[in-house]
Image (cartoon, rainbow, N blue to C red):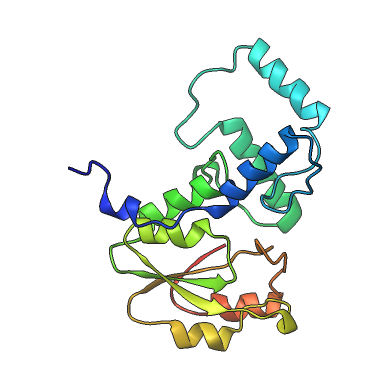
Length: 198
């Protein structure tokens, strides 16, 4: 009897972690490795952040926060968006997560019904289509090309929109290509009717 859900066993492996683990094994053997597998900085966490974390521990900030995350942090994010982008956001519109991947998984969990589609660029970060598939959604790929700066083409997206399309996923700056979607193209995509996830 298999105790693991079929959908979990059908997920393709995240090869990047296999490559990272092999690279780390090579380093333990004394081999110099240049890492190109994961998006991890090649420097330690800045001292000011480490100092603040130590201070928080020493002040007893080690307990559960609000379910959306620390109110102080959410208010600071609101202030940043107001000052930087002139966009007013309420703290209750912000959810703090431990990273982008958990945030995307939570978002797709809340958004998708079985069989609904999410448009994703190709190439793309390998985990995002897996999240969609795991939640019984269907990723629909729109190729982006180097000669066009890996930019989404709005007309190519429009061709992929169907009655089952729930969202268009915009990853800008993009992982893995690093491109920034132009404002003109972003506005054109925003005019489409599905949810825009960015």
